[in-house]
Length: 113
Length: 113
Image 1: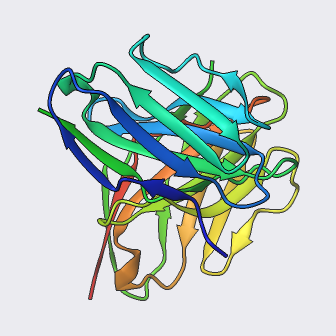
Image 2: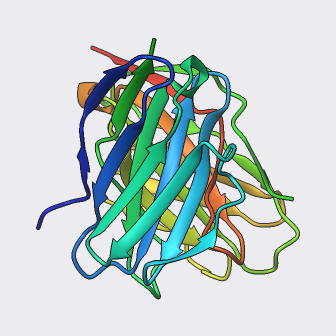
C-alpha cells in the first residue's frame, strides 16, 4: 500500500515568493496533519483536518500560512509571502478514524533564501 | 498542558545488546496515548509503537517494547538485540483527548559493532 505522499521533496525559494506544499494521505485515512520540524522548535503541529474540515489550526504561525483540503485525497499548505525563518522540514501525516497511530510522509525540505 | 521530556540527547549501544530510551510525560487528561517514532538520517518519521493509557499490557512490536509506568508517568522504549540499522533519532510523543501530537526533543541512538 502506498504511504503518505508529499511533493515536492525539496524546495528552494527566495524570500517573498509563494510556496505550496502538497500532500496525499493514505487511502481510507480521514485525518490529515501538517507538522513542521526545525532545530529550534523541534516537531510541532501546524493544523489538522478531519473529513476535510480543519479541526485545530492553533499551530499555524501567522496569516502568511494557509492550509486547505479540497477533497479526501489532497491537501495543500501554502506560505505567502515566504520568509527565511520558514525554512524547515514540513511533514504531512494521516490516520484512520478510531485509531491513534499517525503515519508520516517523507517530508518537504523548504529553504527560503 | 501536555509535555514530553526526553533527557538523553544521545545514547550508545553495542550491536546485539538491548537499550532503553527514556521518556517522561505530563498531562491532566485521563485518556491519552504515547508513541515512539524513529527518524533515520534520511529524514522520514517512522511509527514504531503505541500505548494507550488504559492498556494494561505493555505494547510490543517485534524488537520494540514500551515500558509503560503510569504512576511514574514514564513510557520508555526498549530495543532488544540492537542492529546497526537502529542508529537514528528517536522521538517520544503523546496525544491527549485531541489528536494533536506533542513531541519530545529526541534521543540520538548510535549502534556500534
